View 1 (cartoon, helix red, strand yellow):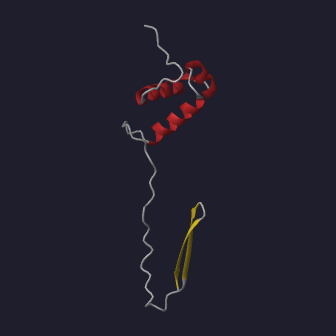
View 2 (tube, rainbow, N blue to C red):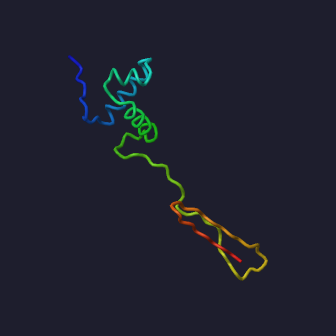
View 3 (cartoon, helix red, strand yellow):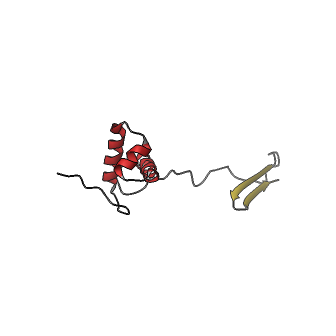
Length: 103
């Protein structure tokens, strides 16, 4: 049975990309040579290699790296005068700065 190649603009499933990446691993070829042979772009190959290596759960969701949504710095209690002054500035990007001060 002849192997059918996908044409330009066609979409591959996660399973097909896993198979292609396994084929690449066993090919002994460099990325450029393998991509030419399989008629895929190197950018797509790198993208799918990252997607599948990060979230190898087999689902259709893309894995994301999460950071804590909240960091507890304790309470800011003005009644405790023996505490040292706290001056905290967070640069949130795009010109947005959060400035917290405990005198």
